[in-house]
Image 1 (tube, rainbow, N blue to C red):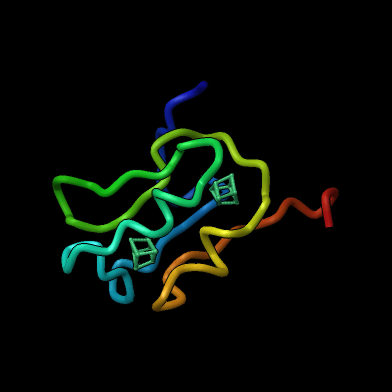
Image 2 (cartoon, rainbow, N blue to C red):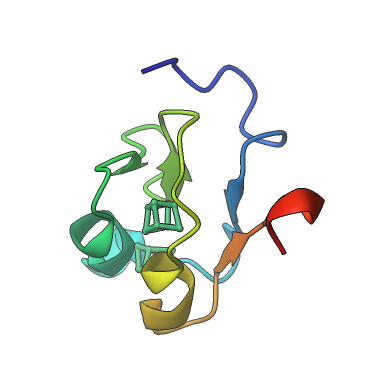
Amino acid sequence: MPLALSPSTVPVTVDDAKCIADKGCTVCVDVCPLDVLRISELTGKAYMKFDECWYCMPCETDCPTGAVTVNIPYLLR
Ligand code: SF4
Ligand code: SF4
């Protein structure tokens, strides 16, 4: 699947200020059935590595701090 080139234009964005991956959280990475989320070694925060998404939502609903936003395309709503 295509690598996500720009983290700001992918379907799923993570608020670094809220993400507690640097404290050991990996919930969003673990629940994603497509395995497209990762924890960045650079920032210690979660991010979307692959630009692919089923818009199934557990990453957003299960994130303990509300850091994940799934931007559902208009046509899918
Ligand atoms: S579930 Fe939320 S807090 Fe945990 S790693 Fe993912 S974005 Fe960060
Ligand atoms: S909405 Fe589903 S497929 Fe998309 S990143 Fe979240 S868990 Fe993965």
